[in-house]
Amino acid sequence: MTLSEFNSLFTVVSLAIFLAIVVWAFSRHNKKPYEDAARQIVEDDDRPHGQH
Image (cartoon, rainbow, N blue to C red; front, top):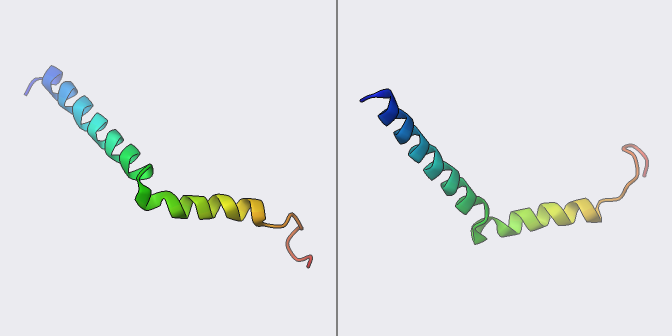
C-alpha cells in the first residue's frame, strides 16, 4: 500500500467516523437528555453555592 493509498483510505475512514458521530448526536434517541440538560440550566437558580 503506497502512501497515497493510505492517505485516501484514512480520509474515507475519518469521514465515515465523523458522519456516524453526527448521526448519533442528532438522533431522536439523544433528544430527551439534551433537552433535559438545556432545561436544567434555565430552571436552576442563580444563587451562589451555600446560600439557601
